[in-house]
Image (cartoon, rainbow, N blue to C red; front, side):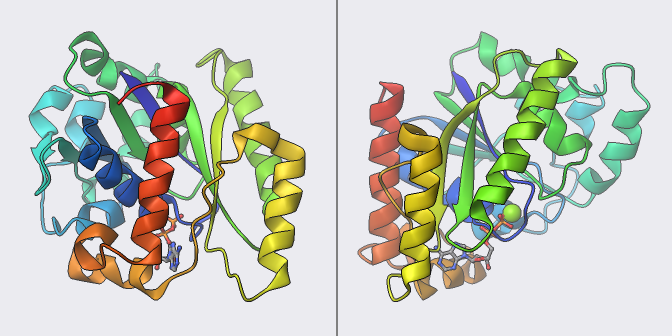
Length: 257
Ligand SMILES: Nc1ncnc2c1ncn2[C@@H]1O[C@H](COP(=O)(O)OP(=O)(O)O)[C@@H](O)[C@H]1O
Ligand SMILES: [Mg+2]
């Protein structure tokens, strides 16, 4: 079992869209996936049509009240499970901050999942700030999957993430953390800028950048409003094709299906 943090301290770059649709595509390929919604806004949860859940998030497990296993819910898709988010999660940062093991609460909360063999991958959909939940995700993760929007300042954003990773390593919370993959999102084929940004990021980060590039499509952006993944909303469109290709590449890279 591997824990992948889908993280970028910037909001609106495609973290949640990637967590939901990569998770869905991996499950369709036969991989057992647990999606953990770590963003109090709960966008991944509602993207799968599962809003209005209360008391079902990781809030209590993070504070040591109950086991994570009690917060795992099935989705419409076999092999895809979710730990939903709720607004309680917004308050958990304050409470965790008071605990002596505040950097490693999530790591410890997820330990039982490492011990049993129920899931192949745990995908953490991270909130867009450098708060306690995100640093906990980085401390718990085996690797980072970072979505980068194809726009100006993409490289500057990546440099910041690399610095954060170094800090987490330096803190001793996770010596092995590294960027496992970079996914370029919202690629607009009508502009030269998108192509230029992808070329620049590839030049600096080489093989870590996925071959698959996610195009900007209206279908990807409207699917969450129906509580659906892009595969249920527009299964043969460019967005679905891209996330299916990303899942295949992910499996190839990790050597398992
Ligand atoms: N490839 C894409 N094409 C079009 N819209 C997208 C794409 N990826 C994400 N979006 C939209 O952009 C917004 C931000 O994406 P989201 O995945 O929520 O980012 P984050 O989780 O990083 O904040 C959302 O409205 C989402 O639907
Ligand atoms: Mg998000």
